[in-house]
Length: 461
Image 1 (cartoon, rainbow, N blue to C red):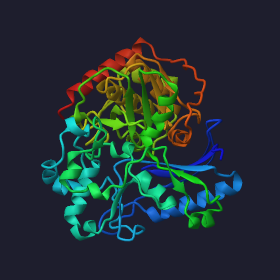
Image 2 (image 1 turned 30 degrees about the vertical axis):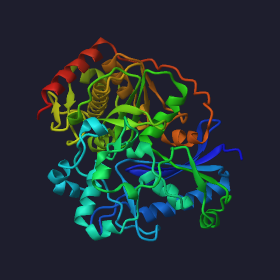
Image 3 (image 1 turned 90 degrees about the horizontal axis):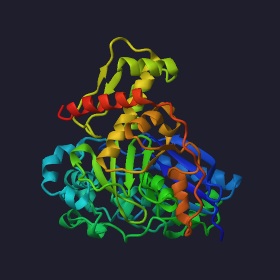
């Protein structure tokens, strides 16, 4: 069976989509989207998996009728697991939203049992951003419900399970600041053994493994061929990284932008990662450790641009540079390279909407450059996702890093294409690309250095 048209279920933190990807053309043929809003009912905020499931089935049916589907792949955000109940179809507990602060109630108890950063490459993060903290809190707060769980599935593998009935574990999601994985050893961390959770995790499979065909009831509901294969699935940032692992020689860095801006260094300089600044070790689709750093850039952009125009012109850029108008970190506290600093504007007067937009883009670029420095990134920088469309962001990132930056503005890469490419056993040719002409000059470099100096002073705030 030729697998050319791959339906990718892409569950992001803010939005969910289903994209039909042509892996020969490296293009999305059709896309369906829906907001992903947690429910506030029940014992804690949780993901509305049944609404998402309806969206997935409806979208598969529509895309199958319109184009045909050869295979299904799945990608999803991290810090999320599903506790399957007694019969394997129900949930033992709702799927916790990682922004819930419940796990912080038991933070001191959890810190006493979690493995060190040297073992897991996973920093201690607030809320439920460490998946181990979520599971610990659920097991202590809802002991009877947790005891009824028969399996723990990472989020991409949960959707693959609903499609196939086959349960699996997978390393890119397990290795995403969970405290559950040892990247160097390529196996579960000591926390899993200490908490006696080993038997709850299904067998480990590779992201590109075919778990099985769709269940008969899925074929009936969607009109898909009953033999349609479903892949195991992959963490979303690693889906963005995967095409570059196929096409490029290191060193290079990939910046995946969305709700989170995740910077990943491949073949960079050896540096000591600082867990206090939201650096971590991810695990890529080949099972290899990847030094990474992140901040909640997409969320910050939403906050900064709320009820403000995003239009700007060259005069706005010149005013921001000439007057040293800056936004200092951090808009979203508790994560990123300046987790304890409260954001502050440096401005001699009230800003125009255009000046605010430019200064905000500079801020996001300089936060990204800081993340890249922290992980020892070297070589070309590839920016994917929404920020790739922001020319001011791209130019300041290039000025701040003094390295070429390629904005991946087409459909040839990104989470959906990366997840779709898992079906290929051969390395396809990469897309043609060129460097854009940057407007950055020495004045931009001076601005970046001044921001860095001001930012470093705020580390302890």
